[in-house]
Length: 264
Length: 276
Image (cartoon, rainbow over all chains, first blue to last red; front, side, top):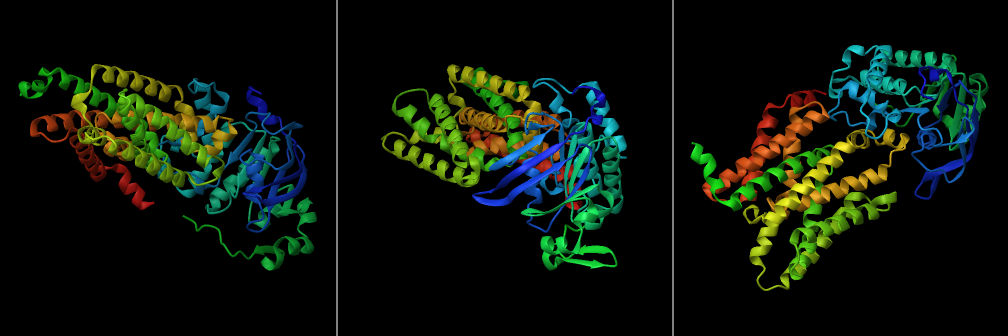
């Protein structure tokens, strides 16, 4: 687990019959699926479908009421640091007094003892991760100075520094510029090739259809799961999104009541 | 000029007062960094008021007032955590209920005493010149313990403050660290009642840290600058109080406020924040 090449160890994720929600109300019901090692999975569904809830379950933020989640065949929590999670940018306090480097080095804290200071190796890995995201020159900047796209790259760099087996990202394509979308997607594909299992939620159905190996369509329960062309059938889309999806000339558009955040 | 600076120190109670103010100024300002960054200012104020019943009971029993405050602060901190954990009620609601209840109980207890006016004013507004040798030692020990807690848990406190999701994923004992921070805050408030009193404790927690927030870009420098501002406010405030004969707690808090106003005017952060 401590070796540098643990990026090549990918993880199988098994979710079986889970139920989860808040304050007595169940958001997710009877969700079961398996992600084979090294797949790239897009999770799609209408607003309120439980995508974020599912992610909270996967990272251990929300306890499940029933069912099991297993990684490498072991229950959630058995592996200390094999999942990296990139949060939605809105949940972060961007005025917190830390530099870009500070944030990325935090990704290494899980590998350090309670009192241990980050080692040179940790700073090297952090800087390398920043360079991979094309923002090595921002290492010393305060996070308050960053644009939306740069903010996302910082958290991607942190996820890279964690050297995860599974990378989970909540809505990485929402509210960032096209170049960051592309950098994000390239990184996901690169990680995918290295065998890291990547799981991403998105509103962008075309992205899900063209650039991921698996798609999970949910609306509180599973509507469809499989290869993109198996999932994106008119019937499934009708069940999942109702009248919200328009398919025009092979391009799928979701008509949303709550549009994603404006670009910064 | 030298005499101007040294003359207060000819009295031993002034020496103790200066030392106590200095310790409390530094301690409040360092702990205050977390209060400001985590948006816990309301909690700090609440805790300061909530220790009143502990002080009152200690007074009635003839015990040590600081010890009474200490017990009350911990009880209330844990009570707030208890009512708001699991999201049963929101934390600020729990704080609102518990701190007013405790304050009311404190006032009720004190009002049963006939000659309470002087002591009450000391508790409410501080009495830095009445600090005994025992109080000073207690303050010094607590300051060292709390600064050690901050040093030992520096990384962990930073993660739970900046990114609680990462903290959970790292399997940090998030609940324990949260309680530890509350206890730390409670202890800090207890020692601060000597210099600025229950009524003004929140100012010492928040004002120097907020000034440092405006002037710095990283957590370690924010802590150091905050501690320096807290120390300067305490010492300058005491001199002002000595020479123009005003309440010491007020003088300290007003000095800190003046520094904050300067920091606000010259902050490099302000222009950035308004632009984004």
